[in-house]
Length: 190
Image: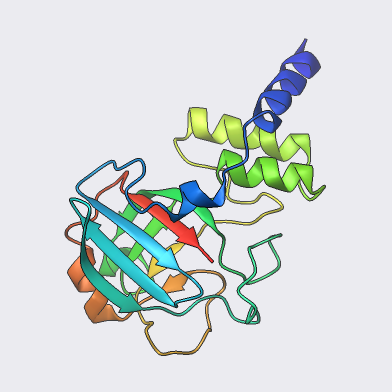
């Protein structure tokens, strides 16, 4: 019975439709608050919207050794993932080594489904991720796609140096940290 439930959960996960680029490019999709974030890797910018109006735009740094700005494909690469995420947790100065941090809900079901279709993720990762989301309220952070991931300070240097995080300057983080809430939409596009 357990194997049947695990297989059913895995199939449900894999049956999720893939996200299309038009959805990812819409900065106003799925707002959970009056603030949302659009990160454009090709433009190297973090744009913060309040009530669907651009409020701030900041330069951003991305994952080292990923100069072609490809999507994250496994836990080992340092590429910045692409997709639609939500702010899972806000960590202030005393709770992170990254100045301040907006932790995102990576990997999502879309990420794991795409990883499974590419052969990078097995059904055990998918079932374990479901368990973590249901029981612990956050994704499993040690899947074959990696995790955790988010937006951090100490950036805006013009050089890609992170392990996949999006890094903006401390001053930029100070501006957005008060207006972004848990559940705020974050869309990362190429």
